[in-house]
Image 1 (tube, rainbow, N blue to C red):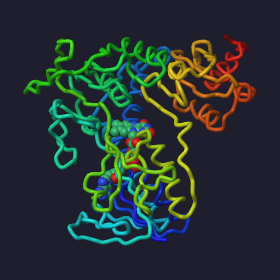
Image 2 (image 1 turned 90 degrees about the vertical axis):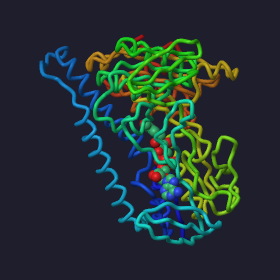
Image 3 (image 1 turned 60 degrees about the vertical axis):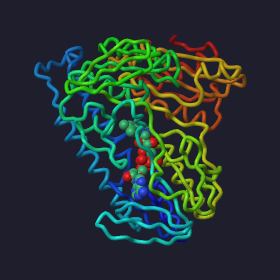
Image 4 (image 1 turned 30 degrees about the horizontal axis):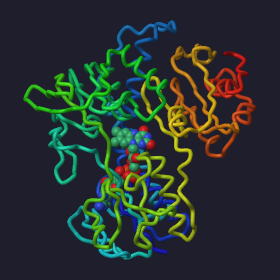
Length: 466
Ligand code: FAD
């Protein structure tokens, strides 16, 4: 079986390795570095920079632990250099995996000629034609930049020119000097993570969010906790605020809100979402259907409207997350090799790497209310937990949501290591476990995971330490 994959982000590269392990002859086409958005301009660089700002915060608070460090300073340029090192090590890791699994990496831009043929404009100027039995499209997404925001750095969909006044996350991750002030338009995951990072680098941050709360799809209590921390750090948050006009001047950016209020800052970070990127693939040539939002339409097995061509990740209408893309890549690879696996989207973890971290799976309490689902909750504050007191991170809580049969249908965590703690409840939602079953599991002491156990016991009014 010959398989050609276009795009080596988490969706494409994991599919390539899985298909090769299953015995396929795999060629993967990538126009930039392997690893895609996630590794080069997304998950990994943001978290590497946040790791630096975490060290800074810990260092500034060291005296509370009896450790004195009077000379703490931060250098964004060196943080960026460290981030780039982390990326290049991981890029090499994927290239090594391609080599060791016999995946052929072709560096260039691919487009469809027919349902079995991909033409590649190689980065060295030549053209190569690849004929295969199956094709996987995994070309990801790009930031949404409506014209009114004057983001003029997009040329032919390639994002360049760091240092512009109006930037996206891509340029933000390359800034070596923090701006004095920054308006962050969009209080979603990227806006909150980068807003807090630049605030900790000394920028005056104003987050402008159209919805009634930051992290608009998350639990209200969780968003409130994060808001409280943002206020403590003097990050200004304007909710229920639409942007009416943007003017870019030599000195900075002037934003007029729908209520007439104006804001000025040295820079504006546009973080209002991302859109599927299928430009240049020539989908129309083979008749692949896309929905009105520009996602490629796929069936339950991730096959497009054209037999033998599959699509995964940010290209299709499932959550734009790296772990969703990689799981879909693996499923698509198995299906291209003859299985009929179905994409599982019941228990998708949602993580925000702010301080405190936010993590959730399944439905939120307000979603249960809106959908009329009978539910009960159990919760537990980290403040009451030994481990949280030990590490000095007491802000936040765990909230568990169960249905009328005690089955865990959702969880929201805000607090220390929330993103790692979520794995346990994600497994419970995935497997359909009850609060009693998971609550009966012995949790090690003293650990943060005990907060989950106490919240599970609280569902039945039996939390010992609440
Ligand atoms: P991508 O990773 O976008 O990869 C697509 C690849 O295709 C790219 O390498 C591109 O160069 C290549 N390509 C495009 N067109 C062609 C062509 N015609 N020929 C050849 N190659 C082509 N998700 C998380 O789960 N956790 C996070 O913490 C997280 N943080 C993020 C932070 C930021 C700032 C951003 C922007 C995103 C973040 N994401 C996060 C989302 C995550 O990065 C994406 O969901 C994920 O990368 C999607 O994977 P993909 O394989 O679908 O596409």
